[in-house]
Figure (cartoon, chains in turn purple, yellow):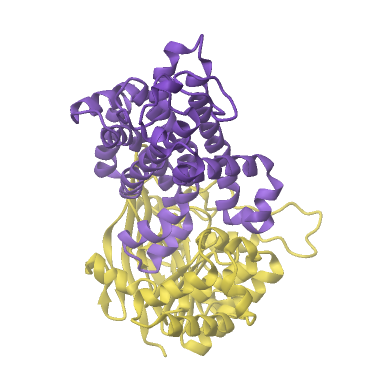
Length: 279
Length: 326
């Protein structure tokens, strides 16, 4: 695996970025001298200090260290990215495999429901679901985004399954007396996991972006909990005079999204048994 | 030894397609004895594979078995439940395919796949399954099992893949092996090795083999008895040596003449005139009549019965029906 990365510097770059942000979010309290400000405690004396040695990213309108806020903000942004994709994969993959393998009416029913979900603009649908779920919160935003996301996996997995179903190793498995459930679990799913993992990795970036968009409009994590989208939203008012406030969290969103997108290709190379040894 | 393991009677399989109903298998009757290799020969699209799949009841929609009886070891295959059928597939009847590369799951190693099949049908521990896997690989001529166990399908050559498929098929001591064109995708020297292996396994394990092929040479080398199929009809069947000594049906004769021979260099290849009719056509008479140089009036009127012309030699042709007028 290490060799695959060595050949692929973009993969190394994106892995480093992702690991850095994940570690930054986990160990945020130990990495910044201002953990209380990171969690939201105001310090009005230091309002809008430009970047300096004490505050590399400057301070915000409540005098909080922006670097600390970005580190802590990674907690909600990164977890929304991972959780949304995990939930979406968990719902979408089995549905797609069942639809694709069973065919006939079950396929029709599952896929038409999927089409229905996909016919709404995703962000709008997520906003509507989040609103329906009650008070805006991190959990509600996550559930809302995940619910708009699973149909993509259903489609992806179904398409893969339909082509796998006709392959002779599936027929051979049926010829060996393997049951339908076992074929789906042991023969179909492992063979669709590569595209799902590739798509999933790329989607973590998009999910973070969508999560940021949700909290930008106030439907995500609520203040004083730090969140990148919400920081960009607050910072945009001051972008002309205090550009550091909105820019650094924006940069964080950009870097993480980019890294996950680039990571997708690397995952493809690493996950495919064909290229695993050759690499 | 002469007891029959499988008997197929009057099997009809059809496929409902958008273009119409395709009659793939039309009244095929044959039996396979214990410990013999039975050949099923014919051109592409003549219903060989569908007949083979019918034995495992694996004909999938839009295809369906509409009539007939298949008895395996005294059991009526067509009346079993899906669960009972699953217990037969792989454990008592196994199948190997034309393209072994595609028939092996690309994401599991060879060892994992064989173990899975063993544990599918037998309540044994992993350790026992692993042991039996190694034995099976040895039995199919892959002695370097440590290497092979860990290998993925794409890391093996075509011949090795087919050996693995055979190991997979026989891992649960099946008594009938349906081999659907098992050597077609392999090169000639490997073909011979695989056929020899099948014959050895047949003798050692008292296995019955249904060998589906379009290659008369393969039939001549390996089969005890053979049935020739033409658009889903058995046109001739009997002991291989009888048939090769004296082919009766014009279609069988045409097939043999179409094989190029050494020394025939420079001469035009022999071919059967016309082409295989589509399965959509329903014949009132003999299906081969439009291409047959011996066609008579009676051939157009009713399908010819299968008549006995030798001890175990049957032909469906009016030329051998007594009293049929020219």
